[in-house]
Every structure is written in structure tokens, then in C-alpha cells.
Image 1 (tube, one colour):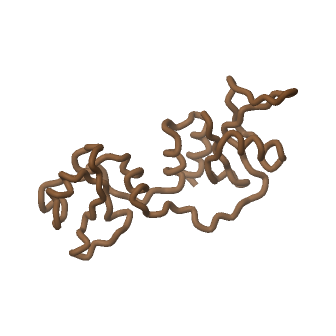
Image 2: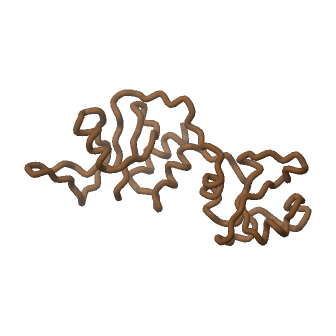
Image 3: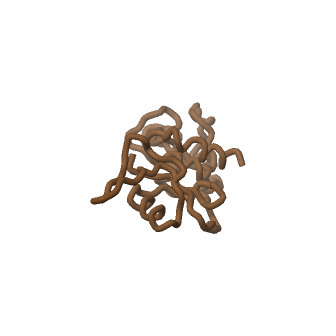
Length: 168
């Protein structure tokens, strides 16, 4: 548990940072600790401090664009590094559902992760034209969805803060 969820002044998820960075923000009175790891502490020569898990900064930070940038790695991440046709996790490539030659764009809803075999089988056709079915419909991921995926497992004490933003 070496990462800390950082919330904006309005409690919206802002980022994830290291425990050291989070402690420094709290120590310098730029943030408050909202949740801590009970079984751990941070120690100096003369004091013990709570081990932060969720902090909220005092001053609101205006983030003009909180979307997820369309990149190869982010498409793989959204698709959980598995082929969206057969589920394979090796030899992955990007596939345009509507081929570029037929007017398909590079967008969140037209790109999926595919293994080389399925991509070659699909070729310059639509998946349904060659009998391929998607395991899930491609969507534009939310910022909160990507914050959730920054840790290998979703931390229990982060859930209320991440779900609050997902509902809002």
C-alpha cells in the first residue's frame, strides 16, 4: 500500500500519489488525512504520524480536462490487456471495428484490443462479417475508472470516494 488517493477540495478524485508526497502535503498543512492505514505508521526520530490512504487538499485545483487520453496503452488498459474477441493476453494489437479503409476513425468506441490471430482473421472487415463477437462493447473510460485501475486491487477505504464521483 504505497499509494494515496488525493481528493480535490470538493472531494472529487484528483490523482494518486506516493505516501511520501501525501505525508508532505499533510505535514505542510496543505491537505487533511481522511483515511489512514490502521496497522502502519510513519516515523521520524522523535514522532509517529498516521500512514495516509486518502487525503483531501485544502485549495480547489481547477483541472480543465479530466478525460482519459486516447493512446495505445490506455486502450489496452481499458480492455484489461486481453483480446476482445477470444480473451487471449499475448501478441496484442489494436483493431479498428470499422476499418480505416471503410471510414473508421481512431476513437474510444471504434478501437479494441485484439490478438494478432483475431486481427488477421478479421482483416479489412467488420467483426460480424467474419463471425467474430466482442466480449464487451468499447466505451470511452471515465477518469474515475482509470484512477481505480492504478492499483492492482481496489482499496476498500477508497471506494466511498470513488463511487461518490461516479454517481455525481
